[in-house]
Length: 223
Ligand SMILES: C[S@@+](CC[C@H](N)C(=O)[O-])C[C@H]1O[C@@H](n2cnc3c(N)ncnc32)[C@H](O)[C@@H]1O
Image (cartoon, rainbow, N blue to C red; front, side):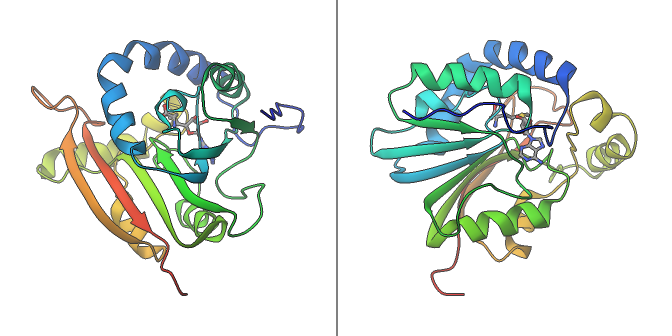
């Protein structure tokens, strides 16, 4: 297994407080999040790029048919957790510094790409998706598990827009709650589907981050 770590100078994303918070909180959510991560990655094979890998919670869920995962993570603290997670998993994972908007990899080198809870945080969504289109082979698959804008409540969508314009990105490492991941994929030229929308938690009162979507999209086979 080849592992590189944070020797690449200044990090593209610097959220040390959020990184510590996320590394701790996300572990405790894995009892129920694990099933969604397994669903996200089921059936993948070949070379995979995961962008915004965080502390590596997806790594144990990669199927054995995956020959290599290149895991891009810009935040130094989370990347260090990801390096340790990579050492514990069966599939070879190479943890690499970098940002979605300028992926440090060659064009058309990957069979599949994975985004999990990341499009909410990237600075420039169209640029990040254009980069994913560049690094996927023609016909390659993008798997996504994202949260976004409420689809069943105008009031919640309004609250989400207000949060995005004020405190939320500052409190949660650049996260936005009113984005529409599927619309962004379409605008970037991906062909979405199949995918499903659901609320997390599935029962009870929704929060601004409850509106999830999990599924696949394809880079068209011929541009
Ligand atoms: C909510 S965490 C999700 C982490 C992980 N994907 C997961 O499923 O647990 C958001 C992640 O996006 C990363 N991120 C933020 N801006 C990014 C960017 N411009 N490019 C790539 N990753 C980014 C953060 O560092 C963090 O790891």
